[in-house]
Image 1 (tube, chains in turn red, green):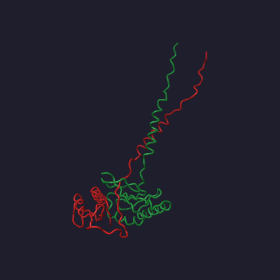
Image 2 (cartoon, rainbow over the protein chains, first blue to last red):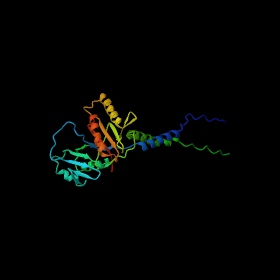
Image 3 (cartoon, one colour):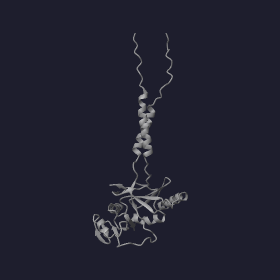
Image 4 (cartoon, chains in turn red, green):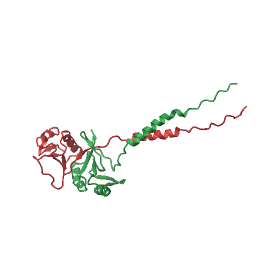
Amino acid sequence: MRIGGQPQRPRRRLNLTPMIDVVLLLLVFFMMVSRFGGDLGLPMAVAAPSGGTAWQGPPRLVTVTGDGITLNGSAVTLVDLPARLAALMPAPDAPVVLRTGAGADVQALVAVMDGLRAAGISRLVLVD
Amino acid sequence: MRIDPPPRRDRPETLLPMIDVVLFLIVFFMIVSQFADTEPFSVNTPEAVSVDVARGDYTLFLGADGVAGFVSDGAVVTGDAAIDALQAARAGHCAVADCAAEPPVLRIKADMATPAARLAALLPDLALAGFDDIRLLTVPK
């Protein structure tokens, strides 16, 4: 008869529970922190300081103020603006000058830029 | 006398597939995720629909009160010094990289309540600082 005869099991299992805890914690951290996709934004044309190419066609000055939008001085709505501008554009990529007036915030400016970009007018030069 | 056999211990082998999957997920999230920029102050980004992905090398923040902010090497710089810090960062970058072939892109993260005139007044300064390619960050509406 063998007492205490069973030899020690040669390999002891590693306790995996702490590792699983840490790994799940890391997983939750990365899932919470990660952001997918890049930032979104509107490109802004900077007015060329030295002349550049000559202005083509009639003036296209869009002024954004706190009271609304004017095109070359006459009031216009954001819905009508692309169509009114299209008549003044000698080429689809012709520049349009965007001027900011008193009371306009960035959201109002972005709304105008957004509406014009949606209509295919993307060369917007923002001036003071 | 009957002696019950010792209860079988849980077999840890059954955990291995789960660990595989979890580690795979961790690697996936580590590779895919991007960390948000440090923001010098809270900014409510304006909303827009027709936008592009705006990758950029530098991000200039513009608060609702019109104060500019820039994070230079982890240090927050606000006010007019932000433009100087931005210009210094660009100069440091251009000293080691070919900025003529690949001009650095500047992203402006302006608050939706910032006066638009403030943003417009900033652009000539930024053009002088050497940035020709500027994106205005927005969020989807």
